[in-house]
Every structure is written in structure tokens, then in C-alpha cells.
Image (cartoon, rainbow, N blue to C red; front, side, top):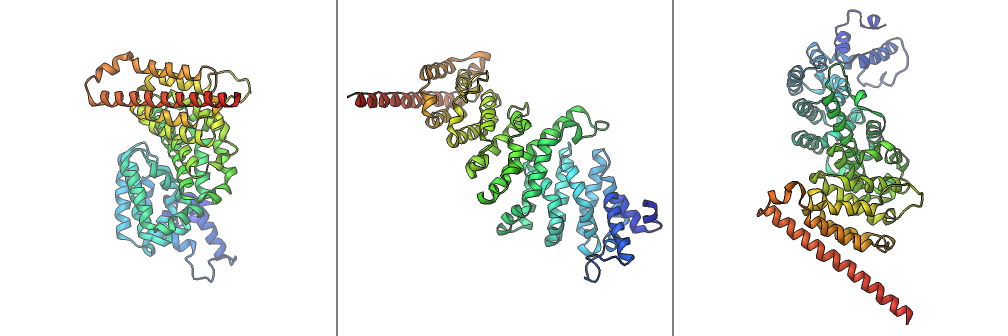
Length: 443
């Protein structure tokens, strides 16, 4: 069938080099048009499929094909040539054909293990979309997922280029419209990566070592959580609630719940930020999933030993507690395991996992948002005080002595003393008030 379609047509040969699946479908449509079948293009003055594929010249086809190679040097050379091609051509002289072939290539290479390739791919994408402008609309839904995922690339240059391109192509007034227009595709993109994909499905084990496969998987999943958070931030609450069922597919999935305790700090931080965005913008979105999500958060967050993740972690914990305080209360299911309060006490005993300057200032805010049932639990105050003081004297692994006399040690000391004073005052005041109210009632 392919041989019949191609024949001696040079444009067809180039199209198959660039993107075989696209070429096949477009030439099939083109053959129907020639046979007199009714098509939207006939008589409309629009560009026909064959004329679009005519724009994929031999040079463009060769570079797109080289981009499919596995070594980074070949990809980089191809991307350099594609960047030059964009500079030298217009929509009419080649960019229309390139735009048709570009979406699957962009999606594949925007997560390349080599950051230089990712940076070049996003730069080529930026040059292309900025040059074609409004003509991007027809292909926007095909590129929006990986484009927004690039916002969360660990390499700042990639993220900055992706964001700048989006802000250049779309005015501030249009950006929210884009998220509404493409919300379905963004949710589908992120959900598929988080719920369905695995380390093995995202990479070809024949050409990629195990470490690179794992790194790519963590990158894609973390960026996908970022995309969900971005959709929440950029979409009105009413429109978000219309897609609650689609969000629930992700939020209630076992993988999502387990990933809060992922070995990857990048994935954990991305999920903390998603929870923060949801609890700030539209906590109602988690109306059906908040119990499982919050319990998973409280199960894993106090074991997080990466100080760089603690700021995002505390945002997620405090906002979740503020919106759904009863997740700190036993659900009566009889499931074994430490309670959320016990996990918090262990966290305090361990000097906040060596991030006291970040965590101690957040402890008072947590106490202020805990439900009365949690604060009034037997021996809560005694256990809390004991854990806080134990953390103050904790010096295992010599981490404190290593910083003795430094500014860091001073800041830690100030944070600890402030936390002890404020938290003790809060609990004592609450106890005195409770005692006073009891005396009044008795009188």
C-alpha cells in the first residue's frame, strides 16, 4: 500500500521520511480527493494534504529523520539544522509541512535524558511557534501537553524558554482561554503519564541504560504533576469542577497516593505543589478524593528527609489540614499503623529531618489548624513537648557540631527557641481556657 501511494513522487518520499504515519494518512485523504470524494478542502481554497506534504522538501525530511536517531550528537546537529530551516523559511515555503510533522517528535524529545537535547528541542519549538503565530491553532492541542510539561524541566534554561515562547505567542488575555480550550488534552496527557506509563514503556531498553530510563520516568511523572497544578492555577473553579471526575481518576489512583513517598525528591515536590495548588484554588476539587490523598500525604510527608522539599511539603500539609482538618482523626477502620500525630512526633524527635529552619516555623500553624479532637487526645501535649525537646538535644551524626558557630546554627537555634515558646504558649493557653470554661460550666 505504501509503495502504491509513493510511486515516483518525490514529495511523498520526503513525507514518509519525515513522518510515515502522517504521510500515509494525508496521502490517503489526498487520493480520495482526486477520485472526486467530498472533502472539506475541495472548493474551499484551503491547502490540500498533497500541497502541504509538498512543503516537506528533501532537506527538511532528512533532518526530521536524523532527529529520530539515538545518539545525542546526531540529534543536536539535526536540531541545529532545523533551527536554521525555520529562520530561512515561511509558512508557505515549508513551515506548514514542518508543523504537521512536528508534534510527535516534540513530544518524544522534550523528555530526552540529555538536557542539551531538551534545551535545543524546546528552542526549536519556540522558534517555530513564534514564527507561525496564529497558524498554530490547528496543531495546538497536539503540542500543548509536552509544551506545558517543559515548564517544569529540572534544567532552568529549558523551563524558561518554554514559558517565554508561550507568553510570546499568546497575550495575557488569551492564555487562560488556551487552558480552557486545551484542558481535556492536558488532563489526558498528565493522567496517561502518571496512571498508565511505566519505566519500561517510556524508554527503549535496547538503547537506554537503566539509570537513564529511571531518570526519564521520574522527569515525565514529576512534570505531569506540574501540568495538573498549572491547569488548576490557570482555570476558573467552576470550570475545574466540571472536570472533577477526570481529576479523580488521578487523585484517587494508587500510584498517585504511593508517589507521595517516592524515592524521587522531584516527584515528591511536584505532588506537594499539586496539592498546594488544589487546596489554595479549589479544595472542592478534592471533595471525593481528599481522605485517601490526605492520609497518604500524612503517612509519607514526615519521613521526607530532603530539606529542599520541606517548604513544599509544609505548604501541602498546612493547606490540607486547614481545608480538611478531620483527616487527623482516626477513621475507625481499625487499620494498623502509626497515627498522623505519632508520625509528627517522630518528625520532631528527629530535628525535623535536619531542616529545622524551614519546619519549626510551620509547627505552630499546624497546631492552630488541628481539630480539637486531635489536640485533646490523651497525652497529646506531653508527647508533643517531649518530641520537641528531644529534637532540641538531638545531635546524632554530628550534624550540629559540624555547623557550630556558623550562621546556620544560629538560625536553627532561633527557630527552635521560637517554636518552643510559641507552641508551648499556644497549648498552655488552650488548656487554661478549657479549664476556665469547665469551671464556669460547673458553677
